[in-house]
Amino acid sequence: MSRFPADFVWGTATAAYQIEGAVAEDGRGPSIWDTFAATPGAVVDGSTGEVACDHYHRVEQDVALMQQLGVDAYRFSIAWPRVLPTGTGQVEQRGLDFYRRLAETCLDRGITPWATLYHWDLPQPLEDRGGWLSRDTAEAFAEYAALTHDALKDVIGHWITLNEPWCSAFLGYGNGVHAPGRTEGVGSVHAAHHLLLGHGLGLQAMRANGGHDQQLGLTVNLYSVRPASDSVVDAEAVRRQDGLGNRLFLDPVLTGAYPADVLADTGTTDWFAERADDLAAISAPVDFLGINYYSRHTVAGPEDGVFADPTRATASWGSENVRTVDTGAAKTDMGWEIHPDGLVDVVAMVHERAPGLPVHITENGSAWPDEVGPDGTVADHDRVAYLQAHLDAAAQAVGQGMALRGYFCWSLMDNFEWAFGYSKRFGIVHVDYETQQRTVKQSGWAYRDAVAAARG
Image (cartoon, rainbow, N blue to C red; front, side, top):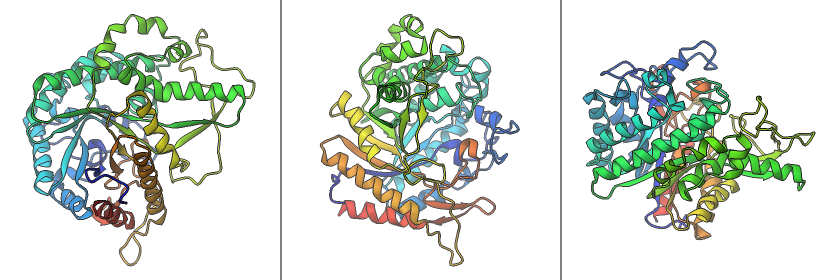
């Protein structure tokens, strides 16, 4: 573990709707996830985040757990509807007070707070007015970012604008498996642009606030994409999958231009040309980039070799006919193949575009069917192995001279796993949802030991 520099950041991460509960307390307004989770059939086990891990009432206990685990940073998200119940306008001071208390509790225990401003919980009134399909939502996000940052910049110095805009755009507005559950076809590509514009405008607004030693960035989920064979068709599948999943988000932020081939694939070239001026805000320099990494994709082209045609009414994303191939690798409980080497690949993607830009793995983890044993422990050996393999990959990236500066294990605790409800467990701390009892898993202690070894 001495392969990591002394100032490497070691953290863990959560998201507001997944752990806080208290969805109707202290003036919090409804979010798209409250609405979506209440929709029959939207969440596999019919559950909601109404109580979740009750973190809203257990902040001190949960931060104390992190101190036990030896982490020096905590990435959490701020719930937009807890601060601005209708998305804009009147501020709910009790919401800001909660996050101030959380940040101060972390600081008191030697843990640096890292705040994510948007982890998918759009205020429902903004969705009712168009959501991320509307440019107005990007401007509303900038308002929210400015006032939240200004109120808390004295206790929070690290800020992430958005978490995984790919998921917000394509799972929320493309195939509808996440909130708000819409299937808007190519409109989801428009949503991706408005999300990135919100990032850029929010970044500008926070920079205007000033503040001592503020570090501002963005988190994207990236996938290493490899071909199933050396055929021309499979190479084309890689281009399309990498384009829509990675380059559509990396390139405008880091190079100031959308990838022309992706716009052609989706039939959106003219639409984006009309909005070219937005790139100045989208590409404003970030202090760091967060990467969420879980797996890699091995892809093949369609069996008939014919890809989606953006001139057809049925075409939407340009990658409909790309097939994901099972490589036979071990899988997590989510069915995701385990490929630690893909972590090196995604850090390299950023390094190639922006050498020297600090990169943090802001999420990396795995779900397994964990249970508390008769002796009161959780022996999650598979997660321990996953964690160690990915820490080894992180060390490899550092050793290759890439600017990897931190690692946040996902997740601190088991939680509401979006459309999977409480059926999947990602935590290094087990949560009994009936009693709210927390139990550190074997992986939690293994992470503690790895962090301690890295610090020497």
